[in-house]
Length: 465
Ligand SMILES: Nc1ncnc2c1ncn2[C@@H]1O[C@H](COP(=O)(O)OP(=O)(O)OP(=O)(O)O)[C@@H](O)[C@H]1O
Ligand SMILES: [Mg+2]
Image (cartoon, rainbow, N blue to C red; front, side, top):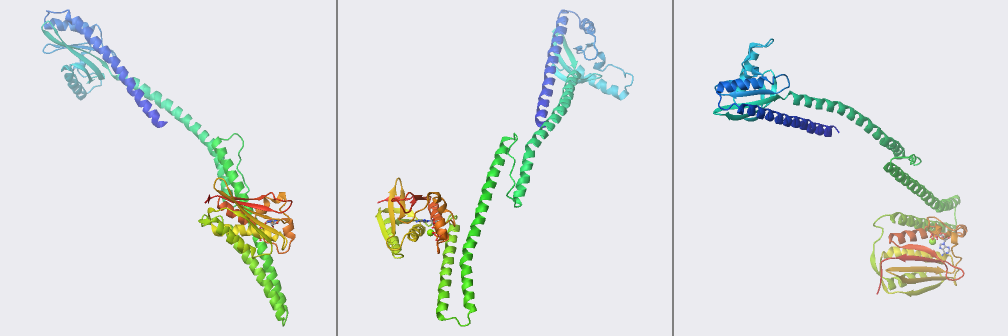
């Protein structure tokens, strides 16, 4: 504001001066014209007569402050003027020193030298003056007529402009300062409150939220809402992280308790039989296997969030699936069925895909009866480039209300919880993590028959051949 006010001031200041000066220029050239016109009537008179007539003419318009100076210069004859003092003929006035008068006389003498056209000169006792001079011949006598007006008028007008600007400027700048302070305070008050909330969050509290109501500046409200949403998500993430760690510790503690209990039993006996040692050894081994599996599963889940989780390769689908299935059929006594497998290439991580399919098949094996229990895999292409793996069994199936929850970490259905030797509940969470890392999906489907479970894993990146 200060800079623009200064620019406006300079423009107005200059313009006022220029306008007044051009008015003065018009006035003095008009006055000079009239003066010359009246002298033209004296054609044929002698220079002295002309000078006398000129003196009469100029004295008829006496000079006083802020009026027009009129003069006629006649080289070799003399000067006629309505203010002769300015031409250096004057004596010291009251209160003027000799030196000042000498200076004035010198200035007056320079005025006597004709300078045709417009000029600005210092004039004794008057100050700066705008002067116009024009040459003419009255008969055979050359004369220079001129008129001048003091520039003090312009200076006064410009000073007036400057005063008005300084006054108005102080008032406007003051008001602008107050207004911008108020506007700034209005914007910064909510920001300060937000900063306080952010500081508390930074210090570890996740509870506080920013106010988003009462007619705030829009941007600030949007920011506060986004911040609150972020805090909600952070709280949820922390809560689920805590639950995950608690579940994991709990799952690890169970086998560790069994191991330490068995070792205590063994230590309490002075001479344990070799059969007893073997029994404890087998138990401890089984629990260690359980711990290792759990730790492996936890590691997979932790890695699934990393970008280098997958090592994608082109998989020749039919041999991949048949090899995997042949391996699985050796692990249990079930009625294993492999539906038609399409020929083609799938771009996926073979190890992770095998792990996901094994988890699905292992669940099916666990929930079906020894011998006649059915475990089936179907591999079908889906448009445009997707492939679907469906693992079906004829076990008790998954209740409708559990269809989403079975994919949560450590989640087991009630029947599984009561079953002895059940897993930790990570198998399907791992399948989902692997599916999502491949940008695919996994879901529980409606069973084909009256009972049983069907879980479908869909992956992209398939090209039939
Ligand atoms: N084929 C199935 N039939 C019936 N219920 C199933 C089937 N597959 C999974 N479930 C239910 O879903 C739950 C979660 O399965 P998930 O594979 O994640 O865990 P888990 O098998 O109990 O343990 P883990 O796989 O870690 O050894 C199981 O506890 C079980 O109750
Ligand atoms: Mg499982």
